[in-house]
Amino acid sequence: MPGVIFEDKELQNLVSQFAIPLRKKTAPHVKKKKVIVISGPTGVGKTRLSLLIASAIGGEIISADSMQVYSGMDIGTAKASKEERQKVPHHLVDIRELNESFNVVEFYHESKQAIHEILAKEHVPIVVGGTGFYLHALLCGPPHGPPSVPEVRIKLENEMQQQGAETLYQRLKNLDPDYAVTITQKDRHKIIRALEIISLTHQKVSQFPKMKNQEEEEFDFRCWFLYMPKEILYPLIEKRCDQMIEEGFLEEVKTLELRGLRSNLSASQAIGYRQCLQFLDSQRTHEDWERFLFAFKQASRRYAKRQFTWFRKDPLFRWLNRDKYSMEYVAETIIQDFELSF
Image (cartoon, rainbow, N blue to C red; front, side, top):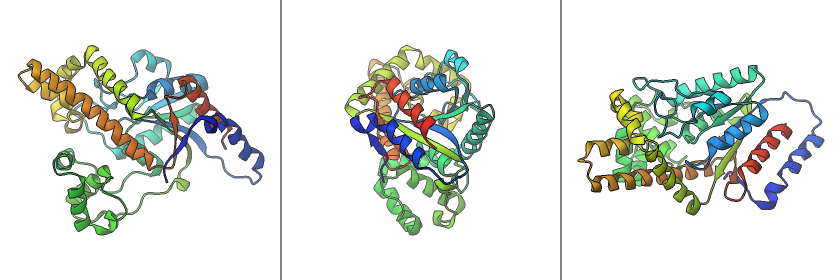
C-alpha cells in the first residue's frame, strides 16, 4: 500500500478530518507520546521545514542522516548551520569522528534515547532526514543480523552498479528463496543487505526473527514525506550542487581527507564526497572538472529517485507536494495534525 498523497481539497480539509475521530472517541486507552517524522528527497527543504515547526511548537530535531553524524561533513550533507543549531537543539549531529563507525543499529538506540530525553523536557521530538533505512529501523525496529561491514557493503554496491539489480536478486533467490519472495528486484537496498547478512553469517535472512510491527511501538509517529515533481526537483538539486561548490565543498573534502576521510569507507563513498575524491585524484583538467560536475549532479539525482522509490512503499508516510503549497502552509498542516491527533 503506498503512502497517502494529499492534494488540493484533501489537504485543505485535512484539519477538519482530524477532529472527527476526537468527537467519536469513547473508550479510554493509553496515549502514546507523539513524534513528528519528516522525510523527503534531497534538496526538497526538509531542514527549513523542521526549523519552522520546531520554532513554533518547542521542538528539538533528531537527524536521521547517516552522514551528518560525522564532524566536519557539513557542506556536502547540507547540515543545519551553527546559528540554526543554536536556536533549535539538534541531536545525532557531529557525534562521531571520521575514525569511528556508525550504523543503523546505533542510530536506532541513540535516536530512541534522544526521543526520551526530549520528551522528558516536555519538548517535541522531530526526526528529520532522508535515509530511509534508518527511518525504517526507528519505526519498525532495528534489523536483525550482524552490523554492516563497509568493505562487504561497498563490494556489493559496486556489483549492483555493474551487474544490475536483477542479477543480484537472482543470486539472493538461489541463496534464500523464502526471503527473496518477500521483496522484488526493485528493493535494491534490501537485496544488498540480505546478501551482506548471508555473506557474514552463512545463514539465511529468513531464519532471523522478523521486525516488530508499528502497533508494538511505544510512540505515535506522525510521518510526512515532503516532495516535488521530479521535473521541478531535479533542477533544484543541480543548483544546490553548484551552491555547495561555491560554498567551499572541495576545500571541505581536502580538509577531511587530511583527517582520514578515505579510511572511512562509508563516509568516503557518500554522494558528493566520493566524486570530490575522484576529482582530487585526477589531473584536475577542465575535462576532469566537467566530469566531476556531471557525476556529482547525476549521483544526487539518482539518490533522490531512490528516496521516492523507498518511501512510496511505506504506508506510514503521508505525502505533501511542496510545489503546490508554501512552506508555512505545510508546516501548519503538520503542526495541526500533531496537536489534533490522538
